[in-house]
Image (cartoon, rainbow, N blue to C red; front, top):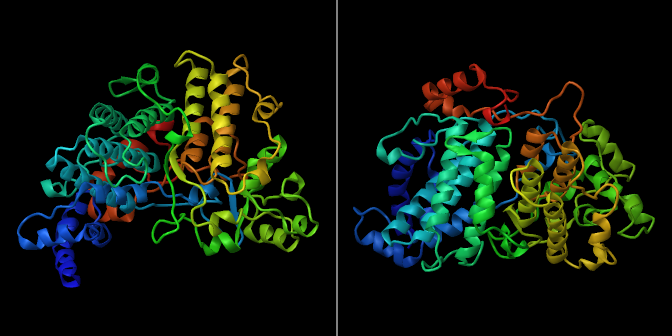
Length: 511
């Protein structure tokens, strides 16, 4: 069996390198690993005729793609002023990041492409629909990170396109909206979905996620009126009024973790989480001011509070460091025993909490914002309240021993408290600030970079920034693009940023 795998690996390395060049990434070793995880029957069939193109059951690919898509992104926690480091200068905390790679996205897109090809062979429309959703997810996030990206010619190395052109953000965003519309039309309750670690084969839940994600894209484009052939507010209202959407936390687009190899929580056994990762005061103070018990599930008590025997639910026992101060200054708070680490469940609990890329709570805040903007009818307050309630429901469901944090808590009283209460009659900016603040408070280790993009888009909540330091709008393109696709990259830079590739160049979606 080992020899068979080695033979397959060699044959795949050449083919996958060709595919990867279609997105201007040349190293295929990692992506090729995927094709080695199929069952023994698949391997035997492949080796019966080495001249045939290898086949992989789409269920294997779906599992692999989902496991990678839904992981937690810790870097966003620094940029979004939730966490600070004390063992060195973290570039995300100090807003000094530079380039980022296309590689993770390319690997995901290649595997999605293969899944959709294999689904076509067995005429399973659901894998094709989920593939379109996954493509939309990857291209959405890739474009938000950089601006213009290869899209219409991306991942087409097998067709001979090894230096893909760059498409504008408008082309990308309108294109993925159309892909999601197609996905919604394709998804059905007849074709079986196996290998589904997100919804256990429930096509209806996938349909809800697909349509809810369409709304996420549209609200993210709120600075624009149109998107290709789409009128943003009109399309939003049509989807919200006519398509099935998430209705409870059981519909969350999330990955549940298991205490098994390669299935444990993303940050499980992280040495950094256990030694040098602490809470930012900006994030902690939002909860302390609102007497919000979700804080206790995120943060650990300060050492001095523990030594004093304070109850876990005593808000005075929690303190954060300033994300704008030097890491050495924040380290001095450790010596003073006056700073909270991240709650140890994030690195000691193998299953911890699920990781979402879009939750029901987030959807309700999206609907609240849309109602506040006048895109849809109905009460923005109702959606806002639902979003808050859903967040509390999530933590009360998934945090171990929730009674120690939430005993006696009444969410309705919380919603009526001065800093939380929402009124449809408030001025637009006040309504938006309330929505975005509460939405932000639900995203500790959730929804990847969404909270940061929301800040760039709306200015809320108002991140503390050091004088003279601005929040970057984007990442620089990877060096591999300069090496292997320079002509197309330079044309894209000229069209977007006057030829300048820097983190403070404002992309189209923010203009």
